[in-house]
Each structure stands twice: as structure tokens, then as C-alpha cells.
Image (cartoon, rainbow, N blue to C red; front, side, top):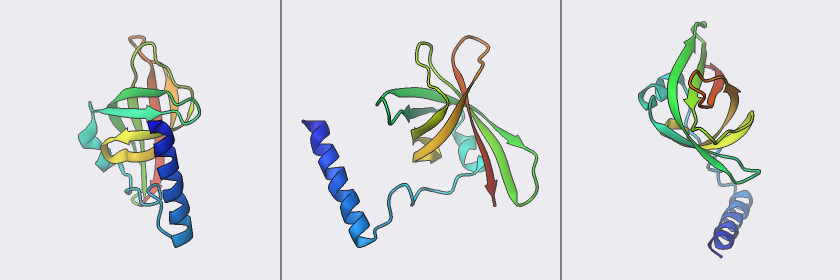
Amino acid sequence: MNQRRRFLVQSIAALGALGLGWPRAEAAAIRMSSDRFEPYVNRVFTFYDSHTGRRARMTLLAVKRVPSGPTLDQFSLMFRGHRGVTLGEGLYRVVGGPARRTELFITPTRGRDGAPNYRADFSLLV
């Protein structure tokens, strides 16, 4: 019942936002940059799969910067998941840190200790 109520409230809010021209929460998301993620290394982020409803908590291991020009911010976020919970490559809703409530495209990578690792790549104009 609680899920149904939340769905109805969100649907009505979305329709009202469309009709009145309100900006959506995703459109009002903060500007991402490598500097914004640095303080959140070793903090936990929650990833939600919109198709299955599954969630996975992951720790931000590192922000790896790629040398680029003065008008380009290229970096990768490296995450470590928990054993037994794996996500496929794809777009996930993320809650935590400067991501707040946004979506990230993650790619699974090999972890040294058997825990699943993931990478989110960025190439942003500054």
C-alpha cells in the first residue's frame, strides 16, 4: 500500500511539473566534477536498478583523473561492491555523495580480492 501511495504522489507531481513547467529534480542535478567526488572516497553510495528494483551498496575506492586539456575534465570513479551482489553494465540511479540523486553508467571491472568492482567514466567540458 505504501508503494502504491508513493507511486501516485510521484505521478501527480510529475504531471504537475510537466503542466506547470517546473524543472524536474534530475534536470536540477548538481554539476559533477572530479573535485566534487574527492572528499567522498571510502564513502558508501547506493545504486538502484530501475528494471528489477534491486539495490547495491558500493564504496567509492578512488577518483582516477586522466590528463586532459584545460577545457576538459576526464576522470573515472572506481567503486567496490559486496560479495554476492553483482550488477551488470548499465545505467543506475545513485544516491550518495555529490551524486545525490542522479544516474551513472557503470562498467564491471575485475577486483583483486574477488569482490565486484565497477567503473564510471566521465569526460566533461569545463
